[in-house]
Image 1 (cartoon, one colour):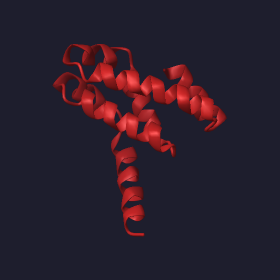
Image 2: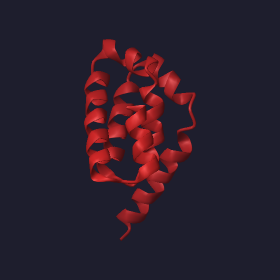
Image 3: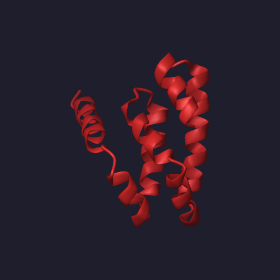
Length: 104
């Protein structure tokens, strides 16, 4: 997933990169929904990749990343690992942009 994310971030939003990334995020979402798999997902570092993707402009990638992180955060251990990363600025930016869109 990290390689696909790096390609996506480096080479722009080409549709095939978006499609691969959305499919991989979907798999991470499914794994994150299972309590016993959440720690494995964070141990693999996928939570770091999901946080990196919070800066994307691609709606499907952003929503998928948020949903996967929300599922991971249901576990106290995973929530702690997520909170160790600098995610607040990204979330504030998302909320700000959403607020601007809602005022149109």
